[in-house]
Length: 607
Image (tube, rainbow, N blue to C red):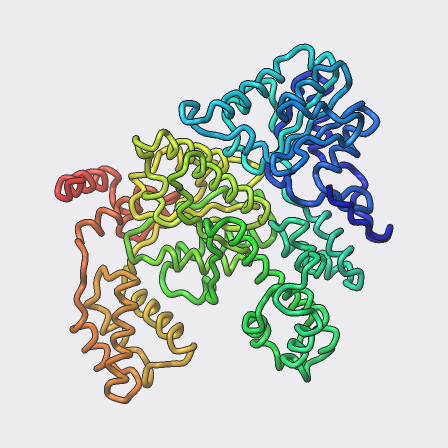
């Protein structure tokens, strides 16, 4: 058992015990359960008073010490598998679970703590489990129903990181209670940062703790040099290297000391990439640098912990940097303002973005997250071929993003990932979709976790998934409707690829005339034409001219079935939250006409 980490009284943690301790006590005293499954953040430190303790120590101090005559711990990875933390040692010539059962039924007030419970009671089809695993599951199930154990004032704790890894027979038992050990909150993160670096101001600590949302306390301690190891390079060596990078800037020595702590475990090349952009800034701000490094290290740790199941999304562009999509941008600006101001009443639970391919859905949402000032992650493929692993992956991701809020969770091509389950996967898909629905409708997530689902085939999505309370806002995207909109898209593309410089020679009044013929061209197609025009101009050694654009538009060949594009546009019309989000030509179109045209296209496209 790890020794508790102590700090000075000035850095004391919140005095109240964690809320989940009260939940355990209430359920136990009321007789609702005597077996508790503790899951999620079970390997972290917990702030108690002015100390950091592990979960086992926390249970002893807050629930068991002085109340139980015997406290036993079973760790299947240990050599002395069952050890007495309090009271007499158990009988050693019995198998571990039999030792625990003998103690629980001995008449003493006994508590048993079973670590790595997923290894003792693994998930899986009963027919595929070994006889020993089946017997273990039956044995713990029997404990929860045994009146003798209840009469003896005994209690059992099963520790597991993911519920999906534990045998479902245990979890379905009404006498077994599941208690989530949550990721640390703002107060606990501030306590740990204050403990590891007392020289930081209250404002700096609060800002860094906010950036550290989603990290465990042990990870934060590691970032500030309290992990017990010194990474790839010694701290003095890193400090000298960083000092050389930022030499000549304000407070260089103080900054180098702080930055050396947050770059533990990183190579010099990684440190250079993090610091070089502002290394020669004489007005370098230590707090900003610490926040930037915290954000960068957090991305690394979270991505690693989630096994690459999520990908952080960043964009250098904001909504004002984009061309076209005026209605959609206006709507998203309001949502961004609500997220920035923490106005939960104005923030939707989720957003459905629909439109044909090439309409700019992904690009728009990345710019929106940058404008909102919130981190964003792309949900990647969390499916696994191993039994129970898919559900476990999803639970890990959902728990992580909830702890990192406020955050945007982007699901691209939602019709493929959430468009219905595979009948041959044993119900895994349907269970995952049901869990996502539950998560998306959790009112605690409003203003904290914004789910953004993008698709060009919303007709393949479950209707229940799209209801208000899950996807409150439905924003349709359409190809530019006029030559003026097309010109704005091209201008935005040119600014993006020419570092904001004016790539066009002279006034660009002719740009709208050239693009007059590009009716129903997508944003992606207009981008291709703009880049082709740049290529033509460079071939002739000149800046962009009307002649280069004329040549590019004539040379460009469109691909794709335009009937499918029309069908996707009509789907976007049918999904829109409000008529004001539609282009004028669709606003005036009767619903019956839209429905009839969609039916005709389904026949033509054999959908």
